[in-house]
Amino acid sequence: ACIEYSMASSRMMSARASPSLGRLRGAKPALVSRPGRVAPPVRASAAQRGRGSTDDYVVTLVNISVSPGNEEGFVAHSVDNATNSVEEPDNRRFDVLQDLDDPSKFALLEVYSTSEGNDAHRDLPHSKAWREGVKDWMAEKRTWSVYKPVYPWAGLWGTAAASRRAKDGVQQPAQAAFLTLDKDGDTAGAKAAAEDTKQITHVHVTCKPGTEDEFIEACLANAASSVLEPDNLRFDVLRHRDEPNKFMLVEVYATSEGPVAHKATPHYNEWRTTVEPFMQEPRRARKFRAVFPTDPGAWKMTLNDN
Image (cartoon, rainbow, N blue to C red; front, side, top):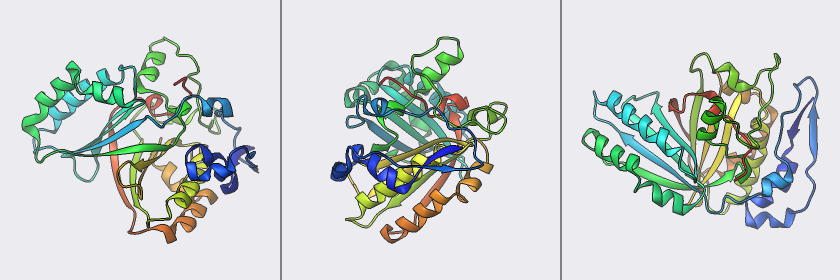
């Protein structure tokens, strides 16, 4: 039977993510067994969750509008920049995404484990070349927001570079899968290997001031269970650095069936019911296709030593 976290257990685990929940630190999480599910995945131990910290992480969401007709050139420059960026020592992710509703709109999601790494990126040759190459194609000025990770923990930010190197035969230490096996014994990523079937959604949330800690508790319970779903690749919870009542959920599934199945799960429905009173405004979702990385293994949640 697959092991799934209950809401209560996630509250205990969330003490690491929210200082105000520190009263729960040290409590042992209760586990709920759901019969008829697949075997449990490899999961982070307490020691692995405690290794390092996301306190210094910098997550930047860059929103870009490209003038019509220049999308292909923008993609080429952005893929080149991202391919080099994921090789930077402090980089954890560098997603290039194209809006499904408006192909002239793109988003970059850049994750660095230190502010120094984030700042150094701007001065590197590939970053400068990208800015120079795309500057005449901007339909409007780029905008960006900075977030801090709530989930996953520091030890679970596997990198696109590590995934690529592992695929090329250079095995990275502790590069173990963190996802469930499906009924045929394949990981969720294998389902999307033959063609790009990934479903990528950014959910933007604004909470009523004063409800942030309760919202985080609910999100940790939902995320910790969601990453155990057979079709799930990622379920990140991010908090806006400058407006702490704003959050973004990054939900990535291997196929279109994944989000549908997710909304039928008990943990999602418990989350939806719990957080509804906390909403200051309706949640807003943006759906994307992956420009970079395209390899499902580069999206998949993995253990890492950083």
